[in-house]
Length: 623
Image 1 (tube, rainbow, N blue to C red):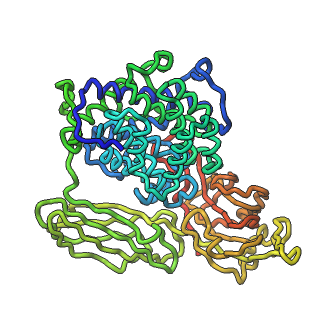
Image 2: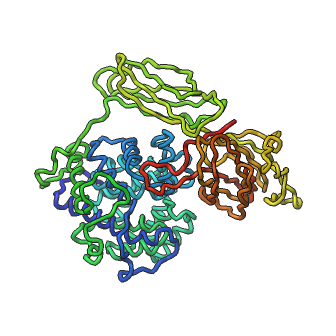
Image 3: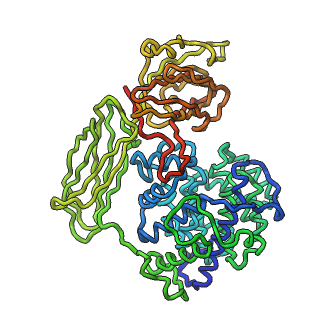
């Protein structure tokens, strides 16, 4: 494999490739958007592939926001800087984006925000599609590009999706000096663990290419081994991107048509393959037939203080940061011939934080009744003098901490870890619980960081129940009353759930497999008391791999039967929360090997308010 070493790069070439990458990104995102989510093979050609209107594209929008953060915060950005900007400016709540906003609202920040309570979407395409900015500002330095990409990806993803963004960022960093797609893929693979599922997808496509199978057959094989019912799953879509690049054979039209005709998450697959090939070719080599329909403008789906929505201007601003990095963190490349005014006073280099506090959780970021939670605080002293002071924690009402304060004495460029053990002592455990850590030196506050613990939901479980049909088969029936269900409409919950067991659900997905690891079918009844601070009309959002019946506040809400492949947004059930205590009963019948039942509460964001969590975080659970 060809290794990247220190290189010289003319600004003219640098800009042409960045401009070409952004043009390809915009073209791909626009053509793919209108069939996004349709999984079938399409038959588009150059006569019908272009849309009548060019839509906004979240693939690009968040990267424009990241560039804005770089311009205003400097090059030493953290994941928290990106998270803060997302919350301030973006309303995007789709899938993993919504889970990120829910966690952020609870004070659960990256990297935990990427995986906690995000079981279904945490390995989706939302982060791999944000890779270009990190590659384009770090030409010839895939290590640095992958490092930035990792800071980004952990906001709303984990593992394979994080590695996928790093994979693409490394490729996009390397296109300035290496043009062979197979060589670029080898460079990207350096950032993908060999034993990972993503690595298997990539190597499968490489093998299929070496066998010279037709691209549709390659697509079929990717789906055979890695197909997922979620059209945004990272695995099949990464496969399609690589198929489009390898079988497209450096022809822009062929590459785009393979990407869109492969189906699934087409705005993402087209945009990423378009960006990579656009950067390889450069703006001047992208065919006019593909450039002319889009012109030089892009549309954003949310607002930031941005001068103009021109693709060329986006490329210019990207290259400014790239030149700045070549003078600071990216010494692997020398960019020459750039305009004299490019390093103007509006660019902020910034510095690493003199003192940093990292907050991590020992286990899940959750607090529950009668059980302590541990939080690990790491203080890093980046100064050239000692750090002497004390670390305090401020608690919300009804909480206590075993460690009130720590004396801190940290040498220059060293760090110290301390632990806080937190307990809840109240009756209503809220979903959102915010704590504050304060670092003082000589009596003055020098740093303050907030963090959150998600309140677990307490359920009472009655069951399991089943009948034996024959010597080998156990069955459970949603229509059969294993206990008197009239109690749920008369409000006699205590009578119905006498002799029940108490379980705690740390995430939206209930831990039924841990509580009841039974192989066959069974039925359980689950009851929880929900505290609401006000009257609200919302949706109860349920995912269930089996059959369910719902009662809410003495009203039967419906029977849901026959869906066995779980996702967290299968059913939206309108309910009216009243101020104070609300009662929810779920009858659940497991029909497949493993039980999956998740419960959440949703309110729409019709006004597209930035930072608004569509998933309620201000409810509570009552023991």
